[in-house]
Image (cartoon, rainbow, N blue to C red; front, top):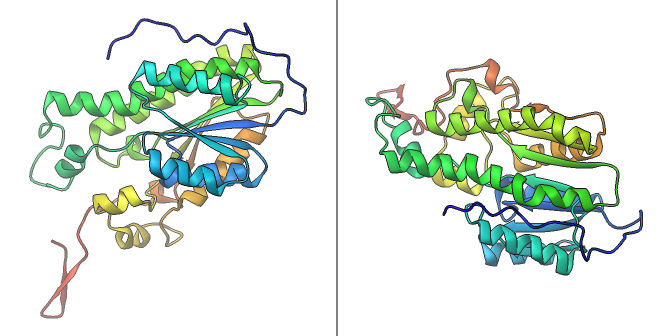
Length: 289
């Protein structure tokens, strides 16, 4: 969907807020996986959490389980949906956000399938439409979150305001070429926005997750035992690991323009075939299929 309309987030009709107004954190993609872990962690430390996601049922359920939270449906690829989110922040959130966290995105199914076929170049296996789908979801969708929700940070009464995006270790040599390119783009967005945001006292950072066990990566068939074998800590990552780093990023006033790797040392031990099927036994010899 093409749109040249700018987000309407002016201060008009927004009341002056007391300094002790609640810290409000929007977690886009907060209905599952890493986003859910972040939403729960921020609620635990006292934030009022606004969960934005396409999954109505799961988003409402998580919001109902948190002490001070509400759910707003949002599609990061639809400007009208993001405008609705902003309007709901006016209606339910007094027109401001203290922190914007975006975890929305994924390696698209065609690209994951191409990665599992060692006989083909994974980029050549994708159609133009499949390439664009990944770029739209992971890069354009993230840019949309910053463009539409970022201005709400200017209305917050708190002086510690931030944006936290989600990249990946993939651009550092872990396959999925289009997905990797979009995540590298997100890191470029973080570094290029640090200065203009800094003029307004706003910080912007990103987490860079390694292979993380979530319902999505389980459904993709990621081989977590293989991940564990090639990580120096002998473990795969969990949403709670990412949430702890986001907690640090939203509280530390000295952090901006940074992309923080959270991977249990995975990038130092390349060679893990994360999508390899579990090894099978044959005449006492272990074979990888």
